[in-house]
Length: 396
Image (cartoon, rainbow, N blue to C red):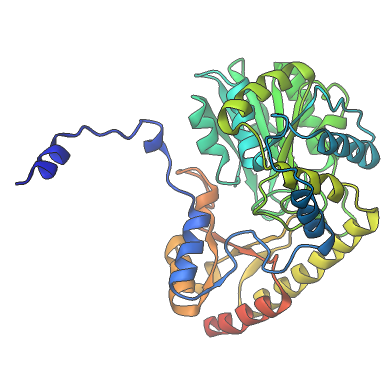
């Protein structure tokens, strides 16, 4: 036995206890499986079409004008000012750009920085399930105990008694994602009013992920929780330019919170990443100033794709749940006789040539409906969606 082998045998297990409590991203794993089998990727939520020329030209211009060094840690002034103006225009929310905004490396970092800044080990964090797969691991990384509340299909509404029972003196925060990934649910005013009431009663923070705020359908309105009475100071709003402007690779997100909470978030953000890409922040500021017609066209753009996929998937035999927002469809696999969503997702990628996400990746271990659904993503060119539907015809 050589020296290297001997050393390898004597090394202890250096994986942390936290790392052992969750797996790698199933969404990104499905993208790798798609690539390996040349499957059409309807798993990961990134567009396969170009971003607008205006935002790309703004980025090039920013680089050529030498916005290439560190920006202010919590974000360039132009971007923070643009975020402030946008929220005033869209929701009549007043924000101080100097004290209440932290620009992060995507909403993913924004969520981690927020939880690290506000959660203590042993605190409980309420998470609705199915949930975007990062939320549970994020809570674990902060030493918190996730407490899951079921969103019941087909409306993916929560039971009032179940939510109320989840709150206690140990509850530190609740995470709300609206419009929701993976379900497409948009929380209505009655639901948000109950959440707000419970947050105030138990002195709990509301952490809202509103990254899909402009991708909504059927004249449904997105209501920021921060606009509800008594919620402005206890709501932390996380957002990003990734989905609205089709630049998921830019990693420009931001967190809006009270000045006191923002000071803590900024400290965590500083030591996590120092700052987001400076020239892309300059370009993002210009994108946030796009006219309202941009968002109207965006809704129509995705509405057509949603309706196409719902019609075709239902015709193939799936039982699809109609999303009110975001760009995903949850489809019940029961009609095909499969009892395990992971096995079915791998079958689709390897044998049919279409990659999706198994729904169990959005649930905790013992949840109802865990293996019932798969998630289709439709932020793609029509040619991509049509090709995927053609391949899926094999299931008939």
